[in-house]
Image (cartoon, rainbow, N blue to C red; front, side, top):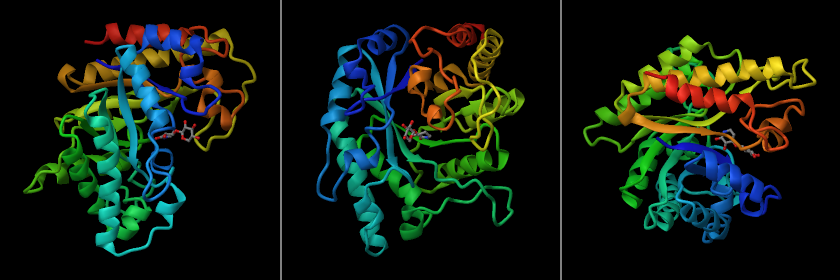
Length: 334
Ligand code: XIL
């Protein structure tokens, strides 16, 4: 099973390619990399007729040289888009052609090497609200939804499969472990894909899992993993981090220091999450578990809260008790 980590790369000062300390951690503890930012649409497709692969190629080469795979993140999203895409004009056919070309060019570029083994084809397409109160959260407004309609999802997966028939194709989203109406909307989407007379190629559901030490409840998480597994698709924890001091509206809470007691709480929470995944997802369906960053120092959560420690390695790049918790979860499962 892949154990992955999101890494900074490209021009970032924290780039894995420039940091031997970070490389040492990645090489020892992880088998898969996700580019934290440099494989998003704005990086790979900066102008309508121009793709920029140099930084991503360097990362993929690095992964290959270390015997690691790469999880591609992400092709179609409402965020992280280049300006030209946001400003694109045309009818439905023109928008579909533009989307298809975007997916095809990027996936074909990486297909031959077989290091990028999976992709988040569509990221965060479900909204956080259920306006029509049908028990399923609605599709999020985005340039894709607004210009192509709901059919953009199936079209994106079909284009992705045509471009790289060997890649595992994921639908990826946040809060789906803990918000039943959002989770159920994802399950409903998968069901529609599977029941289509011409089934839509999808291989996995990605649970981002930017969670906190208290939310979601572990029983809720287990139920969500089990329901996702019951689709027959792979299940991946794609962006795990566990906030210890940030509330759900991203406001800092009261801690100013990462105490031993807090570290132990986090260790137990990592263990519980990983064990839940191992228990609820059958081996053949385990797409793996990736954490969203190597060290607390680099975590995106620090941009909301300077006093946050969500990852497995501390500011000095030393392993935290959370790392042991993660490991114990892997072996303690079924
Ligand atoms: C975040 C990165 O970690 C940040 O560095 C960047 O500024 C914004 O994006 N869900 C996703 C990721 O799918 O792409 C996001 O990554 C975190 C939330």
